[in-house]
Image (cartoon, rainbow, N blue to C red; front, side, top):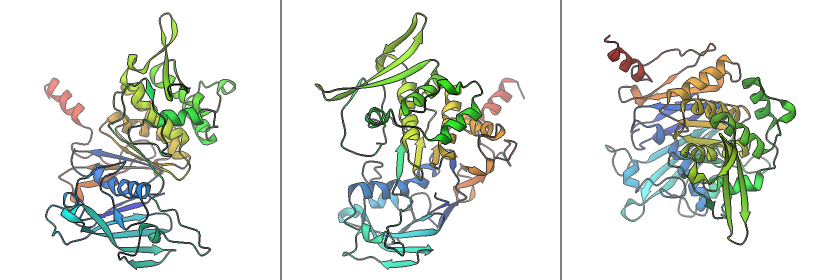
Length: 392
């Protein structure tokens, strides 16, 4: 689990900035364009670089997760072109710091110039053209490779795939940012057993669960959450060999009973929620799951429900980062604390605003679900609007 991220000379953050106190579940919220996405982008840059190649020291700015333009676009606007960019990742035992220079024709790339590791793995390497990314992954005393924090990342972007009837098979073995590959993953893993911690957590949240009727498979637990979010509903995936496609069907309850519909004939919320639910149910312990705007296309009650789902995913050892503009997401985490289905000490809230030092501050959820402070502009627009309506 990552406990701290370090950025220096990267986009908004012109000086060394440490995002510390990271927990099992991390909520990033606040004013647009103040660094929420930038905080997480180093993880995505390194992950997409590993997916593409480990045989060079280049860090790819465009890839399967993000497209950040050229190197001049990602350095701080006031910094010299020669000033390096630095990224750091702190886990339970070590801090890994990468110093990157701007290189390539027309400043199209970042090249790793130096790698440092502090903690149980003491390493300092000046990187040259003969060093590749793979060489920079430390080894333990028995020559086993250390799993770096960004090596196992799942990213579900805000721009997820909308309603679609069929999906082509993919040879990629990772979940894509738009969620299209998750339908194939559901087909392949629908009968896998869900982690017991999720089942136990569901019992803490929902007191009306009939344990005898609750099957622990990915497909059945997925349908359980779909029903809690949208009313009685379920998902089916079939592989049609002749067409080499996966066909998705969504069953919902109508006045005349349940009926199966094409995804294009039900609301966008179903399609937008599916990648998050499937990713959470299939992610391995130790994975980092980044979800942008889980609230998209969801009714407030469904927003609360999907947040509780992500809380249970975090409780089983998947570190979760949520970028959101929804107060329902925040309040759902507070409710979980009150219900004792999640510890307040396992939640980290970071609020981003142009008026703040370093552009962000940490807000603590206390044991009773209350916040230690409530900054100006932090989910207070409803109160401001109500004051106007009441003439206050």
